[in-house]
Length: 98
Length: 435
Image 1 (cartoon, rainbow over the protein chains, first blue to last red):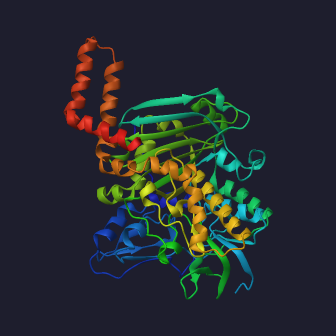
Image 2 (image 1 turned 60 degrees about the vertical axis):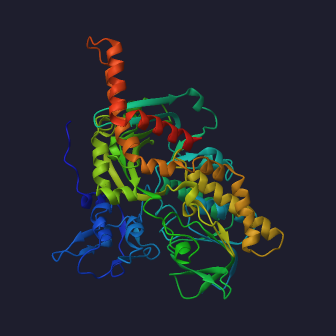
Image 3 (image 1 turned 90 degrees about the horizontal axis):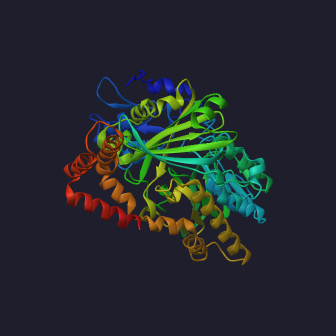
């Protein structure tokens, strides 16, 4: 099968329109030394790849590209690994098609 | 603080919230609707198919005004393995009727229009407003909401929670549980733009006719999931989703699965040369009947996705949302017209009316299917699709093998993969859950 190279998720996010609420991230990762299995799962399952490992092996989030699906909330809020809120009114992703 | 007191506050401007706000405003109630997006629809994601019957009950003349894409004349179901698909297509000219039954829509555009109707009916619609908390009195009754707009509370006799699958208010207030990884699916979607004529040629359509394709099989890599391809006027909505628990277990990535689906030899030619203009993701309630929370209490009701009202088997959700929103509103109007308070007891009318509707009847019918699909996902989404594909190829390929031998080989492959007991068990389990 002729397979085209896949596009990076980070580049896909440029299709979308966002109003970033600078300084007010709506999702926060709890400080940790070793990531829990739930946090590690977010590295793969987040559809916008907002979660990444830093050089110290801890999970970090950059919320700018978040598409507000809530998957990380379902997985990692119960364990206290993340805090999830909706962005402030008007901010965040703004779908043109939805 | 908004000093005004409202008869009802509706949280959310999706299908359920709009249906509720419209129904109550039309009946003369003083309604405030709050939406966190910049405009109604800006946070809403769906496939999307609109079911006309349920829309007609809200706005009978919607066909003349609403931004609709294509009316569906054809439905395709595909069982896929990595190189093939076995399909069942139903196409009928009956669907080219005066009042078509189903349409494809683009939610952001449709919701904007739907919301304009809510405003016309007299409701106050406030966008860019995130509701942060439910306000309760000392007896724990819900008496209004708090928002991120300014300090203070907005009060109402009743709050309609139409906050969607990921709604925080109801869960934070302990009125219902947070969705769990095994009762929500994560779907990712892209909008592929192509010239109108190209879409019509590729899907064998004329005018505003439309097609949907629902696909299952090895595309979800043994996880409980489905792909979809919907033809709009000048674009194709294409996506795939799986249970969050399955993504968590397997470490598969949603975008990886979407890429794989797009590159499938049956899918790639449909979107070749397209320009992608949006990438979105959304959770879908998949828990069915057993996941439905408490639907009402003192001063509140919950509707739509927030109440897990989604029929995953028939791919119906927005119609359950708008129906539950309308029914909740009708119940509230009745309680109000009797001049009675919005207590849990009085609002149980909503539950009773919903129980009598197709919404709960349908979900009850399939109450055991979500668990079956989940616990047997390897068989239903990997083994059987592969077996079916092989069987079909064996059936159609002409190579001098006598037909009896071919049939024997096919049967053998099924028994080898699942054993007689396994096959019989799967058939029984499926029949029992479907019944």
